[in-house]
Amino acid sequence: MNKLKELLTSLHGGRVVELVNRRNQHGEQITVDSISFEDGVWKREQLNCWSSLDWGFGTCRCTSHPAFTSRRISRKEVLSHLRQILREETEDRAARDAEIAWLEEQSKAL
Image (cartoon, rainbow, N blue to C red; front, side):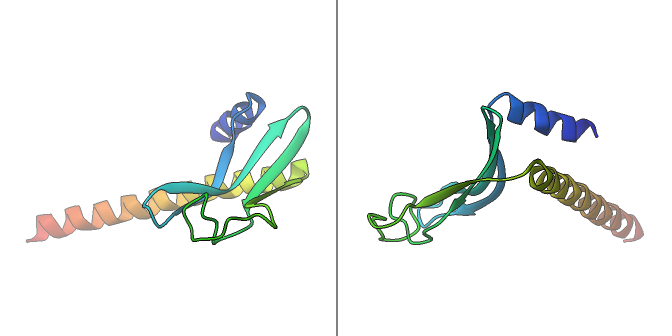
């Protein structure tokens, strides 16, 4: 619960929580899906054009459409996304710890 509190506090402080990052053709990490909280409104912003030149994903100038879209989302959706982030972090840590333990065991056996 402590990590959930940290994320909610961060959002309340005006920070953006990144849901998905992708590496563009220049090797830069770009946030392509995020949530934020501003003036009592939960928002989700997602990359709309995967060929956007401005974000380094292709050659589209995005003049007839927005590169990113922003929409209001519910508190329930926000909590679901935050819990998913925390669940994935926990699972990743457990998998890493298991690999470290296995490697240590194999090293001792050799």
